[in-house]
Amino acid sequence: MRDILQRLCQGQLRVGELPRLLEVWDLETGFGRLRESAFEKSVEWGGCVVWESDRLRIRHTARGSPSGVGAACDSGHAGYAGFVHVHLPHPETGKPYLGFSERDFRATLADGDKLSLVTNGEEVFGLVRVAGATLAPQVAGSAEFAEWEGMYDDCVAAARGDPSGRALNDGLWKVNRELCKRLGFAFYQGAWGEPLRRVYAPLPRGRVER
Image 1 (spheres, rainbow, N blue to C red):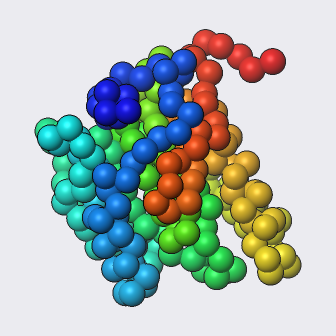
Image 2 (image 1 turned 90 degrees about the horizontal axis):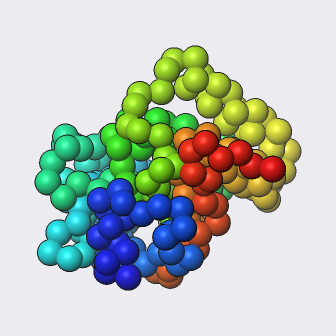
Image 3 (image 1 turned 120 degrees about the vertical axis):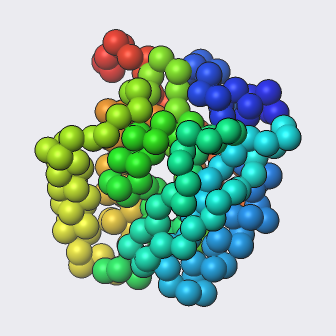
């Protein structure tokens, strides 16, 4: 797994090499501190994921706002693999927010992240860059990003009236999967402290789903 993690952090893994289970809990202590700070202070916290001394570490932590957090450094620095952050409960439902937001996908793509992680306090979700599948680092255009925002807005609107939050989570899963398909990211999901399961793997560029 160490070799797999190192190659993942270098953006070298191809679709057929993606692990079924992803062990990211080198980060448990640092990620746990971010999680505690976020829920104590009701603002998002984040930090860089780096590959350092043969393990994953969190560096350059940053405090954000209730609606988001950005990196406190240049993503091009040595060892940079991606970004980790904490989502607060959804403002309309008060329920944990499943997966990544449209802003997360935009930043992950633009910064060339190889491993992006987010927790809602109970679960952890991961985006993994895949050689030959994920789009090259680029900034999403305004029209494209507006379409992504619309997908999330439609999802929230369709889930209104369901106090359990299941409808919202079902919709968010579909939106996350669709954006992973468009951008070529693999998607991982799991409970805090447990290996993340691969729940979506992209096709290599040029291949079409049948």
